[in-house]
Each structure stands twice: as structure tokens, then as C-alpha cells.
Image 1: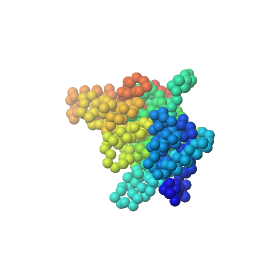
Image 2 (image 1 turned 30 degrees about the vertical axis):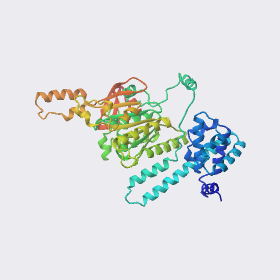
Image 3 (image 1 turned 90 degrees about the vertical axis):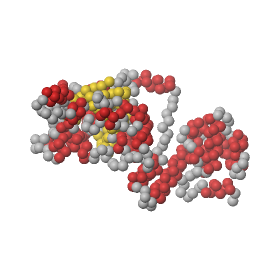
Image 4 (image 1 turned 45 degrees about the vertical axis):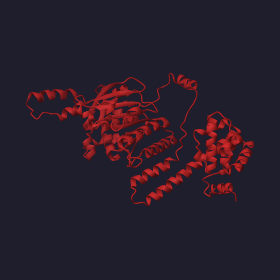
Length: 478
């Protein structure tokens, strides 16, 4: 048997994870119609071919096509003259090109080549995981991360969308007069005004120092958005689903007439006269599209895979996922050992932004800020305070900082409660008590600015500046 036959035989395992005839057919069709080469180039790579020589030929075809040169067995020949197997392959390709079929047939070959390649990569990746699993020096977290990457190889990366600017302009004009597509909260009106409607593909970063109320803000926002019919998925990395649900229940009982204290819901000490409000909140939760994912060890790839799975599950029910919340970004697990905090934060930030763009939904990522904030007289955050990576600032379409002067003043309470300093401190505290500032230093699609709202720590809730002007029924129904 010739070397070419050996190569062919070794590339055709009984597992059917390759189809040599489809690979030959695809190469022949591309020679017959060079215009198809560019259409394949974005998704099909040379290493998607199971036979190394076929991959080398395909790579040369891409190179010649990119230069505008004609591609056929004659123009390819000089590049493979030294290869003993080229003579046989050249004849096969010439014959295949003469028998080229329709574009639908070429597409079928193309789709099968890349699908089988993805499966081969998956098998290879999982085999590596099996080998690693036998090595007791490899941690469980590393095994999970390696398995995630192997499964991630199956994800179709055909996300390139291209059309003429004129066709996109036509879509813009057709959208005039139609409702704006995007997410709004409704129960934090001053924040909605400061941020505007959150559009599909947006990555929103909510930052603040500990104690500023970041989780309360995104929780209240998610409740409001889901109550308006927007599908919401929360990835809770800092607290368990049980803890977060207790905060949500306390928040949902809260109106400008009062509510069930978070402490009571947290500790299970709800009073008899409060239980009806909690049950009513639970019934509302059953009616709105809000789900919580509190899985541990969440890498970027696992996040993307789980969010996509939830999106597909909703679509199968005729529903839509519009908003994903991550609390918080820096708690995502490293995808590989030895990553620096900067590399990790940059990878996660870029991955989340790409995910939002590919899936056409909004992602809100909560982020911690560096301690540098505490060293300044004015402790209002600026984008440079985002911890670990300037990439986060670059990727974000919108940045919102949560700032409460009350928290800083509380820490500076004078010991002498009868002196002039204490009176001045109490006056300052009264002026800022319960107030929260929403600072928007970056807004890619609109003006920057700020809004003011209210933070109700006892109820784990955030509301807008319009809160006290709402009627009881409005507050209860939202």
C-alpha cells in the first residue's frame, strides 16, 4: 500500500469522526468555484481537515485566494511538488472539481468537515482531562476548568455578521417610531434616567467599595426589570441562592409605607403580621421571569455555556432572556493556573463583552474597586478605580458607581457626643441619611451624569428619587 493510501486509511477510523470523501469533495468544489473559498475561510481552518496534507492544501488555497490568484490543481502544484503524495491527490482533486455539485452540496460538505473537527477536538480535550484526572497533583478546580475548555471547543464560533452599510441603514430607518428595544428597571426611576435604556449587546459595570450597596442595587434592578417582563438571570458568586432569595423577598415586600425587615427574613423570625406580605412576594416571584444561578467555581466558559443553555430553554418556551447579572466579576474562577489578577480580569471582561454582543442581550457585571478610593478626600469613584484591569473600563459600554456618603460619615462619628464636632457631624449625617448617588462616568451611547436615590439597608432595597412620590398601589405593584 502506498504512503498516500496509508494516510487515507489512518484518517478513516470506525468512529466516523472524519469523512475523507467530504474533505476531498469540499476541496474539489472550492477549486471548481473559487468564490466559495472566502465564504469558507471565516469558519473552516486548515486543522479542521483530518488528513494533514488536505489541511496544507486548504491553507495554500486560502493564501492564494487572499492574493486574488486563481486556485486550481495547476497553481497549487509548485507548492507541493516535493510531496510524494501530491501526484495522486492532484489527480483526485482535478476529477473532483470536474464533478463539482451545487452550492448546497458544498455547504453540506463544509458543515460536516467543521462539525466532525469540533468533535475530534472535544474527544482530544476530554482524553487530556481523563489523563489529568489520574494525576493527583492536578486540583479539582483545574480539572473542571480543563473540562470546560474541552466542551467549549464544541461551541460554534460562527459569529461574524457582515452586510452593506446601506442595508444596516435601512434597518435603522425601519426602527423609527417603534418601541425602544432594551431593559429598564421601573422601580429606580432616577437610575433609569441616568443610564437610559440598556440595549442588547451592552456590557454594564456596576462598581463600588464594600458597604456601598452594589448587590442591593442590582437585586432591586433585577426585580424591577423582571416585573416589566424582561427575562433576568442572576449569577450569584458572592452569596448562596438562599441568601440572595431572602434579600429579594425583603425587597419585594418594601413600599413607601414600609415592609418586612430583611433581618426578619434572613433569620427566619418573620412576625405573624408580616407573613402575608412575604407570601405575596413569593407569589409574585412565581409570576416573573427571574432565575438565580449560584454554582461555585464559575469560569468564563462555564458562565457562557450555562447562560446560553438558559437562553435556549426560554426560547423553547416562547420567552426571552434579556438581562444577565454577575455578582461579582472578580469572583469568577481562573480558566488556567498561573494567571495574574490583571490577566484574569482582562480575560473575563473581554469574554463577557463578546458574549453580550454574540447573544444580543445586556450583561450587568458588579465589580469591586481598589482601595485607592479610600485615600482621597473626595471618595467618589472614578473609572481608574476599577480593580485589577483597565480592560474593564475599556470594554464597558456603561459604568455606574454606587456611592453613599453616609457610610463614610458613619465611620468618622466623634466619640464625644456632647461637643460641637458631634453636632456638626449629626447635621451632616441628617443631610445624607439614606441617600445613594448613581455616578455614570461612561455612557457610550449617551451623556454621562448622575442620579440620586435611596438606600434602605434594613430592607435590602434601593429605590429612585421618585420613591416617596409614588402611591402605595404603585409601590406595591412594581
